[in-house]
Amino acid sequence: MTSFAKAAIFAIAALGATFSTSAAAQSPALLNTIEYRTNNLDALPKWKKTLSKIAQERKTYAVSSSKAVRDWQAMIRDNRRARQIDQLRTVNSFINQWRYRADNQNYKTSDYWASPAEFFSRSGDCEDYAIAKYVTLRQLGFLPEQLRLVVVKDLNQNQAHAVLAAYVDGDVYILDNINRKVRAQVEVTEYAPYYSVNEKARWAHAAAPAKVASAAGLFAKS
Image (cartoon, rainbow, N blue to C red; front, top):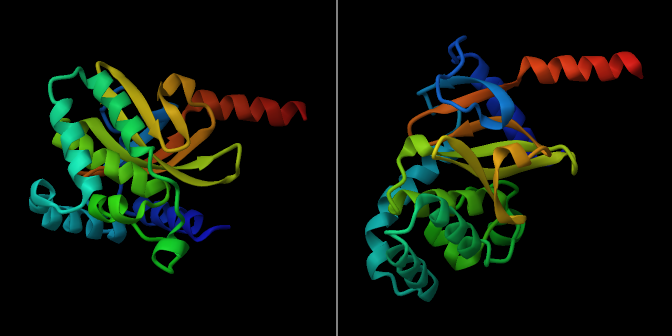
């Protein structure tokens, strides 16, 4: 088990002690799960630290000496008037240009959550792409309620992964560093969420009853 997978499991275990027993009201539910929301982010210290870094560096974006950051800000300016669904596609494509780089290469540690300035300087791994996309879409005018960083289990690869979920026009879209296409969540069958988070709240996820019943039927036949 990778350290990222362990972190996901430890975080979801910590979430369980503080979540409301009622499912969140946001619709549609993320990746066909039952959702449990809390506004307490304390169980996710890496995310809280990343939010702090973002707040500190935000004022430097417009005056950065980094060509990558200047190009990023130019892309944002050029797309402010685009439809939100088109903004998702542009942002996903732009951020995915950076080559994947593991945390142990970048930071000599197994799990580091990078701010956008760090990402554009050194690239990063899956959650770093998702964080950069999150901040980009916030700059384009998306509300916190429209965005979530989602830590999932990749059922095909049997490992933890991170993506960004965006709520637009009554649907949920998944922005993924390993897929050039922005997919409506109905197309995404390979991921099962551990937890999701934005700057306001976090959610635990449980399998929807239909999925549980279906799985039980499969086991009964085996």
